[in-house]
Length: 495
Image (cartoon, rainbow, N blue to C red; front, side):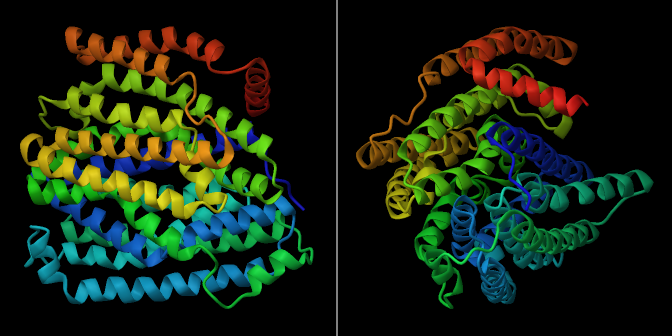
C-alpha cells in the first residue's frame, strides 16, 4: 500500500504542479489573445469561459468538497471501505447535473448571451457550453485525488490537461497559417473531455493504492449510503458564493464595463493570482491534513498545520508578489495590450491574495472540520459587501475596480472566518509574518511606481529583488527544521 508524501514533499509537488497548471492556463490565454486579433473579441471568449466555469460549479453541487473531506478522513483513519462505490456515485451525480444544467443553458443560449452582452448570433461561443460537464468532472476528480494524497495528478487533471495541449496546438496552428474561432473552441472542449477521463481513472487507482480497505463501522456506513454525502448542500452554497472569488468579477466587468477591460483584467489581476499559488499548492495538502486531524480529534496538529501553512504561503507571496510588481510591464507586452493603470491593478489584487496567504487556509480548516455552514455565512456576508463595492467600482474604474472589489471580498471573508476559528478552536489564524510581508510588497510597489522599469531594466529589477528577498524569507519565515526538510528534498530531486 503506497504512502502519501509528507507536508514538505506534497507542498513542493503541489507547487510545481500548480505552477505548470497555471502557466498552461496563462499560455492558453496568451495564445487565444494573440490568435484573436481583436481585444474586444478575446474578452468575449474569456467572459464566456468564465460563465461556463460557473455552470460547472453549479453542476458539482458541493460534491467535489465532499470528496475531499471524505477521502481525506478515510486516508487519515486508514479506511477505504467502499470508497470506490462512493466515487462512482459522485461521478454519476455530477455528470447528470452537468448535462442537465449545461444542456439547459445551451437551449436558452440566446437570452443568456444577450444578458451577458455577448453576441447572441455568433455560432462559435455557445460551443463552449459543451465543456461544462467535462470541467465539472475533472475538478471533482482533482479534489478526490488531493484527498488520497496524489496532489500532482490532481493539478494535471484540473488544469494542465485542460489548457496546455490547446495552448500548444493553437500556437502551432497560428504559425502554420491561422485558426478559426470555432476550431479554437472545439480544441479546448476536446481536451476538457480528456482531462475528465484521466481524472476519473487516476482517482480509482489512487483509492486502490493509498487507502487500505479496513471495515471500520463509522466510515463504512458513510460510504455505503445511497444519499448525497453529508454536507453537500452547504458545500454547494459555499462553492456558489466562492465563485465570486474566481470568475464573477469577469462576468460583471464585461457586463458593467466593456470586454476590453476584461482582457486587461485577465492580463493583470489574473496574473497576480500567481501570488496565491503558494497557498493553493499547500491547500492541495491541507484539506487531507485538516480532515485527518479532525477525525483523530488532534487540535494540536491542526494548530501547527495552520501556522506552518501561513508562513509557507507568505514566503511564496512575498517572493512572487514583488517580482510581479517590478516586472508587470513585461506581462503586458506578452498580451500585446496597453493598460496605463496596470500597476495599480496589480497592487490592489496583491493585498487580498497576501492576506489570504497569511490566513493559512482558514477556509479549508472550517470546511474540513464540519464548520462549512459557518464558512458559508462568512462568505455570504463578505460577498454582500463586495457586491456593493463591485457596483460602485467596476463602472467607474473598470479592471482596477474589479481587482479592488475582489480584494475587499477576500480580506473580509478571512476576517470573518478568523473570528469563527478563534471562537471554535481558540486558534490565532493570521501569521505574525503578515505585516512584514505587506511592507515588503509596498516597497516593491513604490519602487515600480517611481522607477517604472521596462525591458531589460524590468528583468534586472526582478532579479535584484528576488536575490535580496530570498535570504529574508529563508531565515525569517521558515524554522530550522523546515529549512532542513527543504534542503533534503531538493537534494533528492537532484539525484
